[in-house]
Length: 387
Figure 1 (cartoon, rainbow, N blue to C red):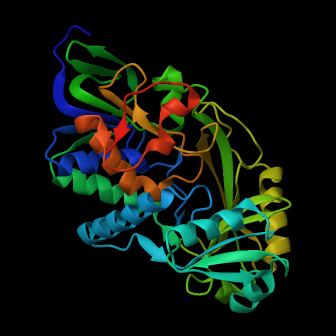
Figure 2 (cartoon, rainbow, N blue to C red):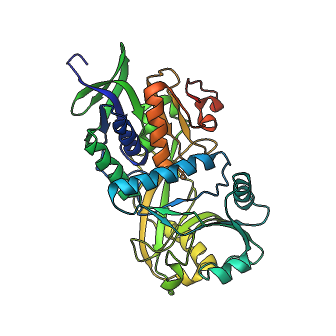
Figure 3 (cartoon, helix red, strand yellow):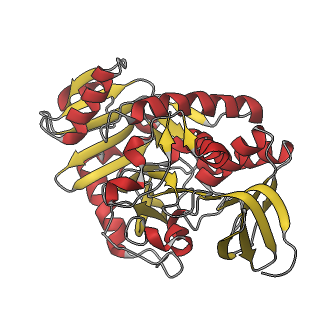
């Protein structure tokens, strides 16, 4: 580390969903920013691919996500205007399960606390309204009209293109080997060069713990598989007739989408086969059991979509112990900020997380309420605060 480094205001490691947004928001504020990406932009080796990602305002996981989602929607629409293309498709969203389930009860609570427009439907009413759904008649569902899906690869590209237009520098196929504080700056060594900045932002997805050992037990990668199945009645699974969903059934918690991009209905099972993995050695091959755990839900709850398999793809969740995000300063280095542990439900927040990470990089705090996401909840102290 003795040669003279190239100097920036902020360096962002990882230019996927979160990192691309962070690079954009920093560039938007006039910062000289460098984004370092180990793979291509976009790529299909991490957690920010798959053609569609759910966005929903009715948030059963915790009501405090809803204000962040409102800001995320605003920022996604701003990005659409800047990019000149549609990135967010509104279909409505369904959160369904047994009447006492957290998915239904938590979603309804979020709607009530934040005065979100919504309807409560029984499984039977849901079948009549949207025949692609064939849930048990006694299930209850929250239908929230603002839900829909984002196009993740296009969102990443839009953030990067906008950031570059504002002067950001983005390097791909460049792997970070190490980083360290040095005097009043942070230095980053890659397989191609040496860089320095006043601040460092780490948005490395499943690779976060490899860059920040403190996250080893707090941001754990998990193998995930999603599938697309050809409907026998494709008209029932078009975006205008099929809301995105979050569904708790006895087989597990599933999520899914109408037809878009691939000629099939898309479905995934949260925590798939419970396989914790190393992101560098993950099994990316598809096996019969991967397909079986998805097809069994399609056949039972969406039978009109149980045709031939169109595609199966691997990705990764990076899970925190409580499945809430990690948005904070490094526990011992306040010049370094971290975004990790998005636990399979983070992409919809990329736009606002980019804004939060820019805040943390600039001044070590944010006006957004990030108390739920601090490292301190795990007994790890960091200095980030919300206004």
